[in-house]
Image (tube, rainbow, N blue to C red; front, side, top):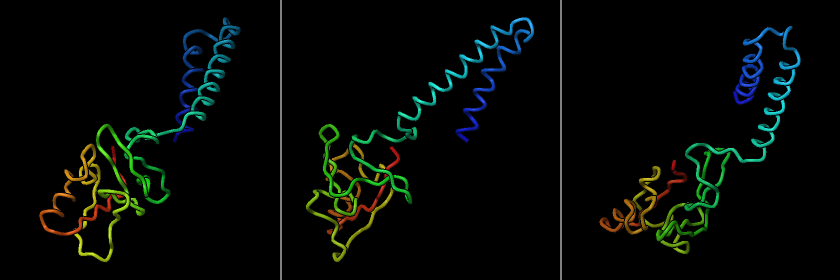
Amino acid sequence: MEMMARLSVAAIGVLIPLARRPLARNADRVASIALAVVLACGAAELALRRAPMRAAEEVPARSEPRRHLDARIGWLFDPSHAGFQGKVEYAFDRNGYRVRRVDEPVDFERPSIVFTGESMIVGERLAWADTIPARSGQLLGLQSADITKVTSS
């Protein structure tokens, strides 16, 4: 699809000047415009190959909470990592689950209430204590396991 879009734009760029004036009378001008279109497409291709392509909702690699590409799911939170977005700390255990602190991973042997979802369950822009999993776990007296692996924002 991406290649078809590029070829279509290049074809339209060549056809626009050709449609305006007959080829026989302005061959030099048409040739120079066609050369400019080809060079512009080449320059755009080089620029696109140098810049990493990101989805519209994808955040830069160093933004918190940090994520990385995954072939099966798409995006995963970086495991065993803690970082700040403003004053909010994001901590993820060795499995990539959001936890209070990196050294307090989800214990699979303890009774737990399990949560999954996207940014609302992860508690984007919220301290751990203010997230739905943390508050629910505290109210019920259970370990809360936020097993969300990715967020859309």
